[in-house]
Amino acid sequence: MKQITKEWLEAASLDIESSGYLLQDERLTGHVAFHSQQAIEKSLKALIEESGDRIPKIHSLSKLFESCSIYIDFQVDDDLLIGLDSLYLESRYPGEFGLLPEGKPTLKQAQMFHDFSNEIYLTVMHQLQTKK
Image (cartoon, rainbow, N blue to C red):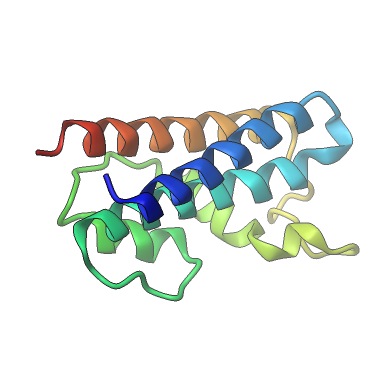
């Protein structure tokens, strides 16, 4: 595995670890969503990097999953993807930014985002470790 791929994966791992810690405080569900989105984005970019293709300068998880479909077959929960895409940077700002249509992510939703990001990370890791 390339060194840069390992660095993408380490960064994704740190986002997952961060979101796990943040889950302990219900006030931080928007930040859990942000780190979950980042973990998935970095995991997918690691997959693209390892393939030798150019990493697109986008943050949309939906578009990144489309780009990665040639490397790995993902079964993705579209609702989680749409939720994370809608919360991306907006989760870092006050006011109405960083809200789902029904408001701030609940603790249950934040847990689902965290679990989803961990699942994608582990799937990418497995793919890259078994790739010969």
